[in-house]
Length: 408
Image (cartoon, rainbow, N blue to C red; front, top):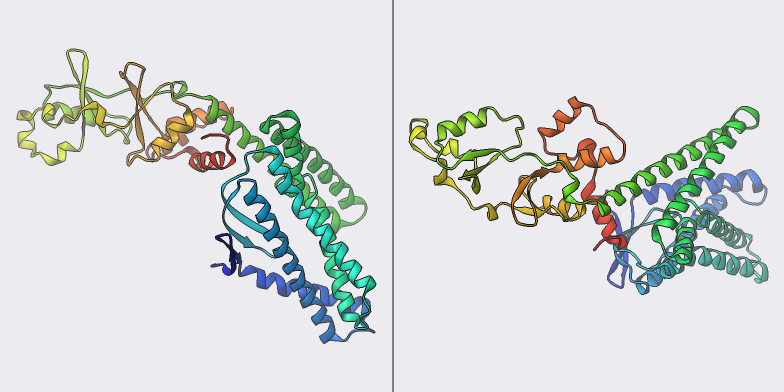
């Protein structure tokens, strides 16, 4: 569903997702019900709905204000933001480049909770010191203030992608000088705290309150799974940065003599094991002489195969997209995504071809590094598609790493 733009500041569009309107209604309904249950003698149904709607609306207004101020701080710390979309109690930012310093991330992480506290304090002071006789206004101000306090404490929780989590890992980064130490510490803390929440939920489930026990159990499981995913992500990042192309297992080059005819070429093509192999490399006196594509068989009449030599279709090896074996693995993935066939020729330091790599080779290498051995039937399935096994999104991971400044 398409988001609605409400305004644009510093070239950044601020949008509201359509789901927000449904959540606004549900939130208004929930608050109005609460008012009816607790203060039915003071407010009628229309006044309860008015309190519910205006509380929800003004809460959104404070969230938008906080996000605008946080955006200002983020831009000053070098963050490049493409757009911001609000989902009622929060916003999702589409970022092109993240802050590259620990201190800058600390400033960004702390600004929203502080603004929530400040907003709550101002609203409570206005409510307390004002001479309003209208109880509806006082009620709305108090409710918006309390909800801001709730958001402040919620955002300060040192878990995952919440401001508190970002603040904790940024402080560790600032003290230790290592960004990864901050991320690893936060991940371990999330795992431990989520496990404790899960155990507490199990105890509540059977001993106290089934509903709250079930809720805590689900929250704990969500945190545990999130921690495990982040741990795998950290491992993949480390593999991509520390590994070289030479660490991979290359596909051997299919060879054919330069003076072979198309009949001999056809026999070689018939015996190939991998359907993704579409190239053959010519040899002459034991040296590499160029390469050809097997599709040339379709362009020549079968009657002429015995009289046509493969050398007539030769292309220079330097026309084949290649990469040095000493190159970082993440650079190989970037280059392979810019090819039509998804294959790269690997050269040594003397520009001598060593073999070919594709997405399968890269995917299996990473899975092996992670300690995951894929079954042979699954390997054969992906070999015929030239895809990263199990849908692992390596290009997106590299894009995220670039935004974070981990690679350039």
